[in-house]
Amino acid sequence: MINKIIEIINSCETFLITAHVRPDGDAVGSELALYHVLRNMGKQAVIYNQDRTPDVYTFLPAANVITNDIDSVEIFDAAFVLDCSDIERVGEEAKRIISIKKIVNIDHHVANSGFSEISLVDSGASSAGEILYKIIEKLSVPITKDIATNLYTAILTDTGAFCYSNTGSYTFSVAAKLVEAGADPRWIAVNIYEIKPMAQIQLMKETLKTLEIQQDIQTGSIYVSRKMLKDAEALPEHTEGLVDMIRSIKGIEVALICQETSGDNYRISLRSKGKINVEKVAREFGGGGHVNAAACILEGDIKSVKNKLLNAIKNSWV
Image 1 (cartoon, helix red, strand yellow):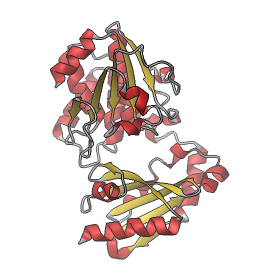
Image 2 (spheres, rainbow, N blue to C red):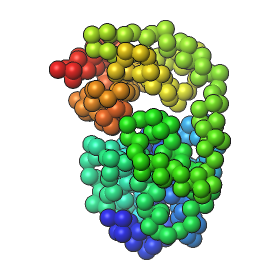
Image 3 (tube, one colour):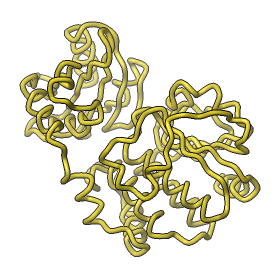
């Protein structure tokens, strides 16, 4: 499949690059790395995301080229859909994007729907960035400092700074090569993990007041309301990392965060230390992800939503 993807890159001239809604470090880093590769090859490329780039990733090389609007898709010879298990994950423009003649899907989610005939899906990979590295390496194009910085960010963030179980020896070997190519681990880590806006800290303070622990199923949960976001002058992206903080509590095996997106809808993020497969829990509610990190959307009041999730987690212990 890598050879087929390389053939598409070499034969096409105009590319659309996109990823899932609420883009994370893997999505943004992979998109920008591919953008630099294509541009360095003399190709035309446009990065489109439905949602704005989180401020934490605006330090990345060429982050300013990402657009949140798309006009005509007829101009594109091919589209790369990155870090998406299903085309619907790109958002409202999914139907128009899938109409592009050639769709290449690069993904590492176990529940990938196989929406594209040209797919490179490896659920054993740490990130979409790690898979993309294999393609770039076989393309035999120089990995510049900008490409290395973006790919390193993709891998760093999706492995939880190399702490998650999806981190293997190959992941470290790729990271090492990216550092050799110019990625600065300290500078990247500082920008991602050590420069937090006060609004995010204020939001963290408020959400921790909602912490509940169910000892019988070793689960910790927190809740983020729209009012909390407003009062803290925070953005939805500032909830990033909160669920991992709950998972870090001694004795907790599963952590979840319920974020209110509208009056009756909640975006759920789940994390596990390994004993519970949270991808199966999320899939039960139409979501998906990985064994130790998954997400879904539930409708209802906060009490009923949490009860559904806790019951599903309880059943997973059986």
